[in-house]
Length: 295
Image (cartoon, rainbow, N blue to C red; front, top):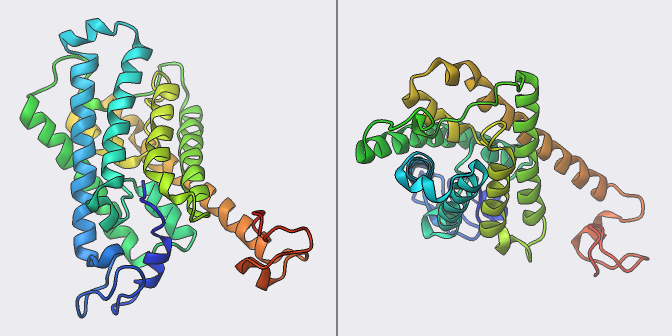
């Protein structure tokens, strides 16, 4: 995930001198959004991803396999409850001061997409992804420490698995498409400064829709970090056999969504009807800016 309109901030702070919206960074250390050093931003990604995974594992344990599950006997109702809880946790993480410091990716697919679109420096991709995966393991482990071992076959520390009849190709396609859709929402909102304030609400909502829609088919992961930690703690071959799909498919979907965005941006900038100057808000012959908005 990502918080509101951090693209310009990341571009501005791509050097050690800082700048942009966050001011100068510490001498010799790259500044992240809000003046946070790159190392601190990585630590925030670790903490927020771990916190969301802790909430996820807790929600699955108490909603789906505890005596409380009798109040929601239908699987779709249980998935909806988990989706709401996870959505609220994501919304809090994205809108919190910590989320604003790191950009609130919490998902390697988001980090990859922002890099592909040129909104995130390549040298920070691997540290962010490593922090997100490590946070997933830590958050799941913390849930085990607090709540104890698994209490039922459906629990597995919230690790997901595909439906028995679902092929690997169908699983890959579904997870890639779900991630591409989530990133399409993110990139669309980021393209308009006036819309960016909706990101902390729109992305959790999109994630919740994916959980409810694909929960009984693929598990509705759409995030390599969401499956990585739970699969490691589950210690079951059924999770390991499909782990590569849950890791690679979201990255493929994110890359596709980002490439489409880059292509669309390129077409807008090189449209014969809208010269380069009109991209900065000058009125065209049709009365609209090059991006389609009314000038």
